[in-house]
Length: 446
Image (cartoon, rainbow, N blue to C red):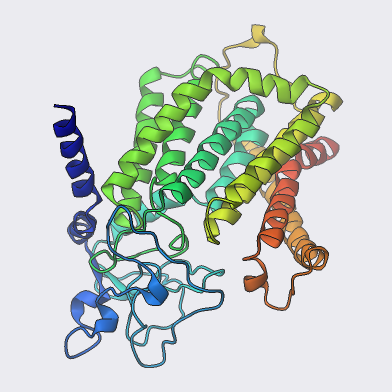
């Protein structure tokens, strides 16, 4: 009985992992790969059939692990197809280096929206026959990218509710850290291409299982609902519908983009729900410790750094290691900033007798003040990030003894990537939670 259930469950997982389901969904949504049009001429040569480059595995076997391509390895694209598939991305014939197209007219060839600056992946051309779905799911996948995080979290902290904002970031750090580490432990490759069309290559060097986009797309909206319902006055059904819509949009977008199988997305959703169930009761205790304990700064810095070091030991180099250090650095910086805020009386938590809050009337003055805080604050954050990047990489390379002539190669060393990401984004997080509110108080925008 038990063995029968186990075998049926294994067959179900294999079925949900099949990349052909992803390809069929993409075709239903009007996405066509360049390899479907035999752009290589005279049929498909072996180099365009999905053979892996440098040993990269593009099949869907559970036990196969992709071998990472060496630093700087990159197939030439001078009038011929790429030599096979780079990390699961199908080759193209004479594809250019263009990262994006501004207006995807039906039937016009496009390139992935962003290239991966660390791996050099530029991806394959594809055709979009339904612009509405393309823009919708592009927006959905951006809800799990850095551009969204660096806009949404500061906006919520500066303009809506700092108390809820810092707790959502705590949940986000937990969920993303566990998801990234699980990816490296499981080691499943991305859906094979072909048949899947890769509309995005930025995260293509990472493993696939579980989908961390699905995890963050589940954790953030539902944590937002759990933390705001009862604290703010709004209809419960509205909160549930908005959280569910956010979650579904992000999850489906990852299948549309060709970055995850159905199984990856389902596992990411369920994994995130499990983390919320287990860790949400401890959220108040952790946040109170970060705010009030005199040893909290030391604990915050050391704990996040230890977790980052552990994640770097799980697998060989990939962009996910740097992303993990970036997430932990951001979480540590924001927690430190809020600890200092409490010490200095900035962004104080309102007394309980004021709850629940009534959403304010949105007028021109409120919108102008909120937008001014957002624009000014983001300018400060982006400036600090740019300055810290320029200063940190040469400094870390000099301290660690790594040559800094080729930044892409240098950042593939743990002793460079870990402190670089941790310091840069720790500073950005600290600026978001402390320096920007301090600036607002000085110029009368608080």
